[in-house]
Image 1 (tube, chains in turn red, blue):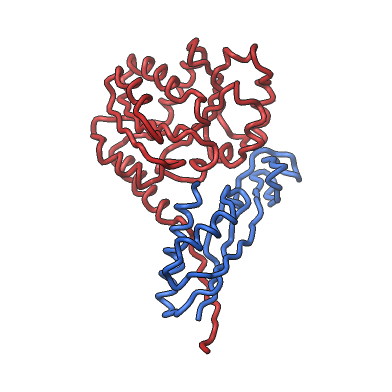
Image 2 (image 1 turned 90 degrees about the vertical axis):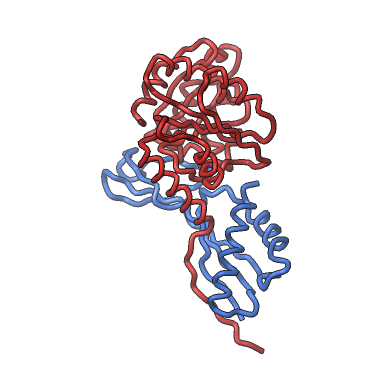
Length: 217
Length: 115
């Protein structure tokens, strides 16, 4: 019989992801490029928000690119192609985009020609929340049709975000969504959260959001 | 299922340390997990069983010790716990919302029993 011994390790699990996230961040800082990690449930309106965003950015001298994550298809990427922006499609049967995936996507972009990169993460409120990619800020989209109690149900996501976009506010009259309650719930989890009220359909609130983008650069 | 990448990292770490200690077998793995993590213990257990099947960590028992969600108040310096289901980022001493999350995100390999 050999002796059983207990060894103390105290080492972070998934540390490899964080190491690569830090490398991504370093690389972006050196190239003076900002990166936002856009997260939401499926169907909250990430791609439509980006369409409205690029319409506004066209008038400003901000050169943007998108890293588009989808389990299947390139439908979202095709919608964004008309803006003529650099676009990297990541198709993977995954529930979130990891730092190594973003690292490979960055390889495909000419960082010297960019100011801002949007990551359109996989639609999911759990898995992307805890994974660093090297972004400057995590931004979450919550659509009015999802309900105002979401912050209380998915605390980690709201803890990790710097900004929250409440989207589809034009639909509020047709739902039981309580905007004040949604904001109160989100601030209960994260008091420092920057909140934008937006309708990507009518364009309401897009200007404030685009203004915010200039502050992350 | 974000547990897959986490479990792969865990197994890699376990095997690395087992090699460093010249272990023949890993019997128990103790993990500390902050309550803000959305990893499901049972999912990690069965993934670990599957992934470790051909290794010296096969059959190892996984133990999870939860770590509380802790805030530190920037106003009065108080440190306080919150429960996940009653999450509120507000100091229970002075009422300030200028608080910083200092515990709850942890996810690390604490100790291993090897032979």
